[in-house]
Image (cartoon, rainbow, N blue to C red; front, side, top):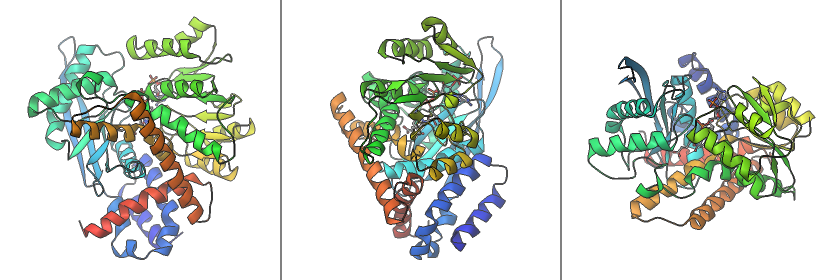
Length: 446
Ligand code: NDP
Ligand code: 2IT
């Protein structure tokens, strides 16, 4: 490894020793860009690595709210504005009990390079709370969102920082957050993305991350003159990303056979067709039920407490959460014939698992490339809001498809340029990094 990279990585480890997820993400990116630092002295002279690993600012705040029994509750809110060298801060909000500073920093750090890859002008940020929307009434979620925004509003804006959804933050939460922002600021601007279609949202944004992940998979398969048609696919999670991943797999002639949630996995050998997917969308987004009910409804197999990875497949689309594929899971996938992994989730494969996929030279699309379609379409929502226009489904889908092709092409080109053709981990990290690093060099020491 390049000596400068090793030195900065050591500093990062020393300064953030308790931030396991952030260290994992930082180590992967820094190790990947090591050959770039060997070739280009200017990044060291401009202290790019020291600067890029330190967020511009970290906001942490109290979120007090009242539950339906009038009891006072307090959660912790976060917004990490990591880097705005190429555009306003942009990234989702995650509401999940596991949320802490390490998780928000890892997500914000990844977002810098992902957003750079999209070809659109967006910087990197992430936020959220340890609030758990599960089991809460709509009124409780509304009061929580209003309280969260009562602090966050002063730090965001259409040219400053544009939040969106992530785990636990879907159309309902974005709507409550936007309503409160609009009220406090007395302005109607595109300060959040993922908005409702009738009030500034973009068509295809709900579908974008899942569709994009499958488009990215198609691009990887095309390098081997193959396609998704006829492929057996495992999908984890059953939320926003998983749902539209299944829809696009079906549209392109593949067969999705699993979905999961934190309680277990359903395995439907006949495939999760459009009708069954409509049931899942209603179950998860309206009734807010558990995936187990699918097994009862359609006589599919339910595997309590298990993830999908030991089921034989051609392709895997992890779409739940970080570190959901271990080294052992990766070995099992490869042994069972899996030839492609496209990450809908952020950092779903742990470092040992990544090594397994790279060693076996399977088509492995890391999250910051494969799931960039979501934030890219958020960028398209921002563009439409600025113009006060809205584009058709076909138009947005076409642009999304073009962006996923461009991300694939630039990641592939960087992997070739640095001597490891088809290593998309290296390629995506380098392509995403160089654009931001050059902007930082050009803009001076800030
Ligand atoms: P949702 O909240 O809609 O769905 C999340 C799904 O993952 C649920 O099925 C949930 O199960 C499961 N899940 C969440 N946490 C865990 C956990 N700790 N263990 C097991 N299962 C878990 O979120 P999204 O679909 O939006 O996000 C899924 C992933 O995709 C995340 O990694 C997110 O960062 C990433 N992503 C999302 C984008 C977007 O546009 N939404 C864009 C790019 C990436 P349960 O209901 O039991 O919690
Ligand atoms: O991880 C991600 O890229 C997202 N959750 C989407 C962020 C966004 O701003 O649309």
